[in-house]
Amino acid sequence: MTSVINTDQKAHIIRDDKEAIAIAHELAAEFAKGDSERDQNRRLPAEEVEKFSQSGLWGITVPKEYGGAFVSSATLAEVIKIISEADSSLGQIPQNHLYMVEAVRLDGTDEQKKFFFDLVLQGKRFGNAFSEIGTKSVNDVQTKLTPDGSDFVLNGRKYYSAGALLAHWVPVIASNPDGKTVVAFVERDAEGLTLLDDWTSFGQRTTASGTTIIENVKVKAEHVIPHYLAFERATPMGAIAQIIQAAVDVGIAKAAVRDTIHFVRNYTRPWLTVI
Image (cartoon, rainbow, N blue to C red; front, side, top):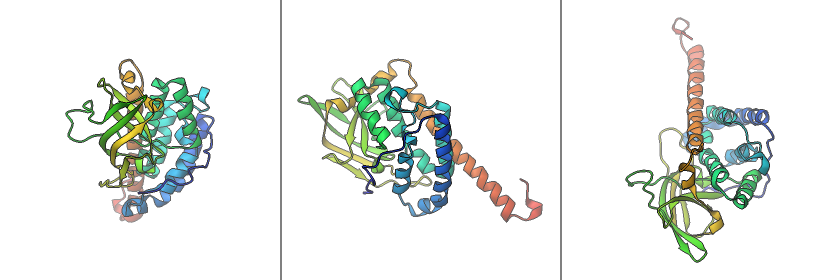
């Protein structure tokens, strides 16, 4: 399992949209240098992810009243697009972290917001344990959160857990005793939580998207968010994930066009040059 590095270091606090975009460009120039080598050798980008979150970019959607910049959705998309053009895996990894920041913003208590937003601004990263295999639909959540005194116990198995291997906390989508979908935030070193580096793919090979096994993991009541509430009223919850994914795809497309132009200009015969 890949270890998380520099866990005690405090992240930079980004103050506005302009600074967020400027820092994204700086990081992208650095990340692009090792993109192909990381993908070819499937080297998980632990150091790069650490620099990414320490830059403050993983905290740019924290509300201003809790110390964040709360950048616009356009700026968020621009940041992810810039990083994804340099390395699409690095652009993909924070998607679920940012999704969880929005989940806390929408349905966390004030105490939960203070606690989790402070973690984010420190540079702590959220992974994810959302997807399951073999269910009837995405709403058919088999991972269960059951009462255990004043707290809970969590059991289940998840796949495609992008970023979990490089996270400090792993938010888990689960079904509560009422059949409602909740998010249980679990620290990555929690007893009973196992993260497997078994992700295989063609492209985006370094998103750390392995299997998560959850066996009798204890969860504090204050670490559970009633996620179902975000879908019982009009909220931007689903749109946040979609805009980030769209930004990743645009970044990939821009990189493909850029590389094609470079190839045509430098490696084709002059009479074949069309761009």
